[in-house]
Image (cartoon, rainbow, N blue to C red; front, side, top):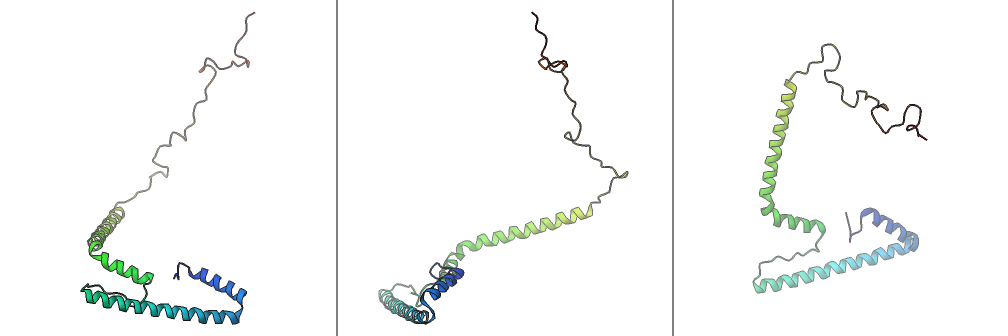
Length: 159
């Protein structure tokens, strides 16, 4: 739940800090004043909505003005109601694809369960070892002409 973009834990932290700063007696007075302001704002909203509705009805416009201040939930419900004709076919096709996918998964599970998996007869794996597991031959100095000789040098200098 959010109230003016402030979450529940943030609201509790603000109230605790206000309680420490103001003290319990002033907190009660502040809460009372805040309640009066909220009631006054709600009254102003309903009066404005009634006046606007009266003007819209007189002009012949078919729009219903909400009498309560909008909340996030009411706005989300209104958007969902307005977009449902567009999104309904997409949701229906998505559901049908999901059911077909589940059917394919079930049939694949049944196919795997029916194929027997026999262990190797002699207890050894039937696969060949990979190339990384096989030992590599070590290169010798004869394989490379520029390699040092067994005596440790690159050759002899003739003087």
